[in-house]
Amino acid sequence: MATIDDVKQFLDECGYYFLATEMDGQPYVRPFGAHMVYEGKLYFQTGKVKEVAAQLAANSKVEICASKPAEWLRLRGCLVEDPRIEVQEEMLDQHPQLRSMYRPGDGNTCVFFLDEATAGFFSFTDAPRIESF
Image 1 (cartoon, rainbow, N blue to C red):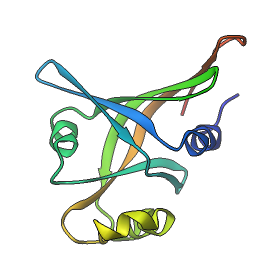
Image 2 (tube, one colour; image 1 turned 90 degrees about the vertical axis):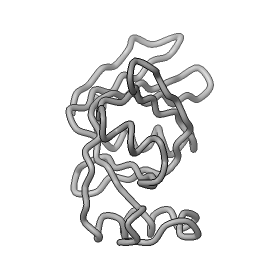
Image 3 (cartoon, rainbow, N blue to C red; image 1 turned 90 degrees about the horizontal axis):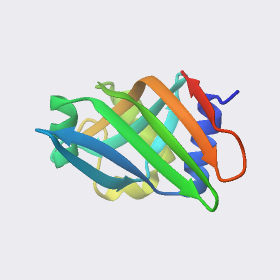
């Protein structure tokens, strides 16, 4: 049984992964790297000035794809913005490399948690593991 910690560990091991959004029928995919588990939820971070923030405001459904040699993760759900400053602080504490671009409460930093999530772990040799959380 896959857990949110298994998902976080997989993302940690990949380093970067790809987040897909959709707006007006057009898919958009970009690399992401900042994530954390906070209060039992998987969080991601971006800037409000980025196109991805506008896309998420219009349609919160996302899919994330992460891969390692011979294994991959497909994660889908809805990203819900969490406006709390303490969550922004924790994200930046866990990803200090972002502090050159973001500050808690700066009006640009935004964090989202994944809701209604389904994680699929796949490989070329093992049966898929699909879990919802």
